[in-house]
Image 1 (cartoon, rainbow over the protein chains, first blue to last red):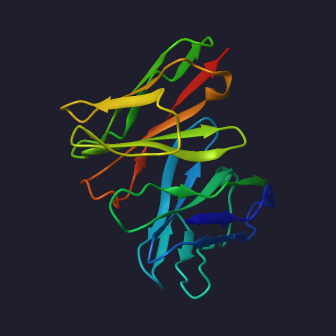
Image 2: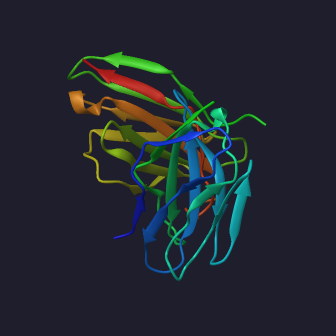
Amino acid sequence: GDSVTQMEGPVTLSEEAFLTINCTYTATGYPSLFWYVQYPGEGLQLLLKATKADDKGSNKGFEATYRKETTSFHLEKGSVQVSDSAVYFCALMANQAGTALIFGKGTTLSVSS
Amino acid sequence: EAGVTQSPTHLIKTRGQQATLRCSPISGHTSVYWYQQALGLGLQFLLWYDEGEERNRGNFPPRFSGRQFPNYSSELNVNALELEDSALYLCASSFGGSGTDTQYFGPGTRLTVL
């Protein structure tokens, strides 16, 4: 079945460092791909999405490109801030009726000043 | 625009009791999804409602049930609570009934079973 694999955390960075969180997926067809972020004690917030190959999603300095050839959707940010500390979830949704989001296990990011 | 809202924020129950969780979707959204985020198990899909009907269900026992009201709000009921039901329950909503639209999440209800 469909699945999402994220790099294990936690990821610990200093402020202004470059961030990459790896995400790969297994799916039939052409799923939509998402990154959600969960701040401490809160629900999930949609960070960015891409619905077809080579699409680049971007938001708040984060970006990710849908790479069908490598079945990847890696999250990047050029300069992280302390306020980016959170858990990041990669997810996919098969483009057919009746499907739900399938999430990776989440990657905890901790940024120190 | 108001986001997805959930109530209560926290809920404490004992084994064997029933829990009822509520969710109001974003205005204009007709689909509501429920997910469970249990420690060590990640985020798992529970139920999907659209236009008042249950459209899909995850791999959970029948004691997890719910409904969707005419105003598209939804209720999740968990009967005969077990300790392992302790989790954050997240509700999400989306436009339409195709099941492929972007889902927007609420803040969650933290259920603790003692």
